[in-house]
Length: 245
Image (cartoon, rainbow, N blue to C red; front, side, top):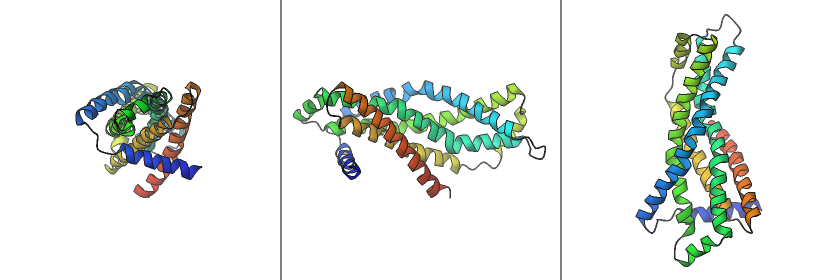
């Protein structure tokens, strides 16, 4: 069962990554997907990032109760947690729910209403037309969302500890600048690109393989979100082992 699913997924991706028949149509679809998958997700990404940064910073400050540990450690620990894990992974999981379900339901609806069959009759490669612009847009726009998420999370962390009086602004900023390694940003971006591909390709597969009616579209959306989330966690471990250890 699993081998058959993987095989069908690989074959679909091979069909999706063929050269588009018309570059102008692809560019038009790409602009639409930038808006649909990226810009429309900006609000929830920034909102969650701000509170997530504040929570991480406050919890770190709360757990540092030894006078031997400098308060600048709060900024350092918050930065490392946000850059390495929270923004690239947690935000990607959130996008898997928001974007993944949308992709699966959109393509699944086209499948059950026979719109995909119409595209085939017209001589259009449905996988290339429907899935490739989504993958391309997500791979480009998701790293931008994650960089914004990191910045807003750090700002939220500073705001939370400053307003609560847990850590001074000077100590927090000193911690943010402590032993900074630019590779951590590259690591976050690499993970985000891989996760973006997983979200769009897996959701596209489940939508494309939908059979039945409206109820089955809902089931495909659920499977897309669950499968994307599981694969993201697995690849999070793999990438961490390959890039950091």
